[in-house]
Amino acid sequence: MRCPACGTPDSRVVDSRTAQSGRAIRRRRECVTCGKRFTTYETIEEGELVVIKSDGRREPFDRNKVFRGIQIACTKRPISTDQIEEIVDRVTFHVTSLGEREVSTKRIGELVMEELRKLDEVAFVRFASVYREFKDRGEFLEELRHLDNPRGERP
Image (cartoon, rainbow, N blue to C red; front, side):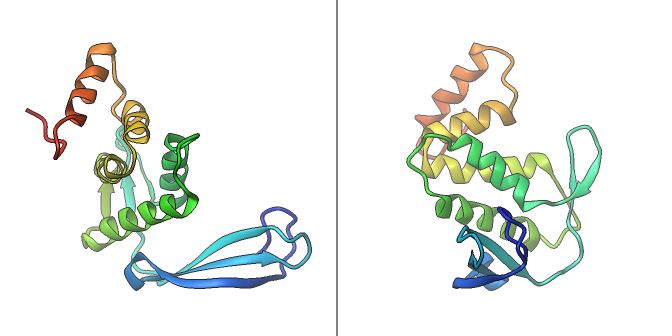
């Protein structure tokens, strides 16, 4: 694995642990040249999971896109990268364990929102505002009212 900072192919493993309920190995690595640390995942390849976009297009599932979306919602919040990784692990595990070859972005978004709702209300609202594409202030306020419901159910 090449270092994302300097491109050197040499790195050493600093820490290894299982992820995705034992279906992957998460490795923290350190570049021997520049000292930058980065994370890699080793997973068992199964059939490729395809994501159905809202406009009907299909593309391969990319856990990095899920990570980036959550990371943006968590900007300037007291949420660690490890916590974000754990959410991505749970969402990835859930969509891959469905036994389906295709999953909608709607389902992935709902899973992410369930996780963020439990972790941080501000990050949840940020993610929901982009994901649900609120048209006006009323829709946004309606979502905030649902936060007061202990289980997040809609009336």
